[in-house]
Length: 410
Image 1 (cartoon, rainbow, N blue to C red):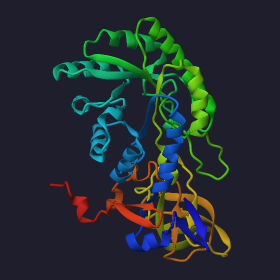
Image 2 (image 1 turned 90 degrees about the horizontal axis):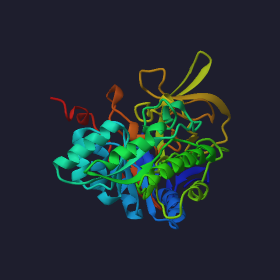
Image 3 (image 1 turned 90 degrees about the vertical axis):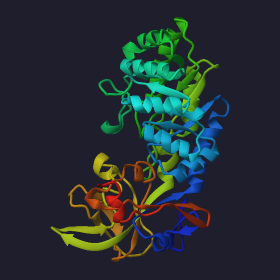
Image 4 (image 1 turned 60 degrees about the horizontal axis):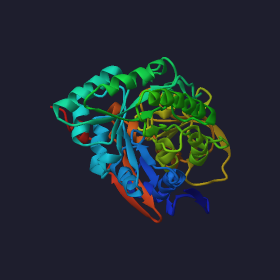
């Protein structure tokens, strides 16, 4: 939903420069209609099957975004008690909330059970025991799926690989059937499904198909032991086009390759996050200084690694675009932030037109793992967030103040 009109960059029908003037910078800006389009691409493909599209809210947990997804019919993929709390406050039906994560505490498990969430994705034998004991204590039954690690390398950044042998995630593949046989004996456990999530920003269908084929073998073995698997949770992980020309998979392609692997009576859960919100959100920032040092050109902006850590943490690429198109010559430039770290940058060696001090830049496709991973490092207040719908913009998170930095200190 980004487009230039007469050399001015718009998000939907609103000028980015107007957003900067109204709300200040740096600011996260989201396109409501891009979120809707992205979600509908999943929903219309899954409509032939009985199942759920559960938004991975770790990618973006802003209440305004979550509430929008509630209205679209989404479920929620959560990884902490706090995410469950946010989702309930945003209006998610607890019967559409799935809870994953390798380190669920007793307090979080009890909170989830009392909140009547749909299902736990169980990642260890000891976690299964904990859920069973806590469910017994509060006299409820807990629906579960086991997260199975299928030992599939998705060929993505090593920090976001989750289905490869040696990672912390899931039940080891060779122990999958054993896990279900143990769960069958638990009085307070209701076996409902199976789960697999192999990683994120995956651009090739091969790993998805291989993981599905291996999960099918587990299902066949489990069901031979009299245990019915109703839901197959295929996780998330579809990549997006961060760089122009990257070939990405569509939800339609993913599902068309996955569905035939399994029996026709199965129900499916998908847990997209990045592919719903990443290209719907962008970081609007301002050039505060220009500098040449050691033969290098720098643009120093007022967004730092505390606001968007992906370039630093994952060496991730985000296209950087001036919000005003000019005919000025392009120079190789590092776009860096004000944080006292050499690792603080938005992009290195970018060919950008010469811009003026005070001009605005847009760091694109920052809707996923942008605001959600931001911090107050260097005692920098958290940014404002704005949702754009057509020609209207709405503040969905106010900019924090200096006094907010001390909010919980004693």
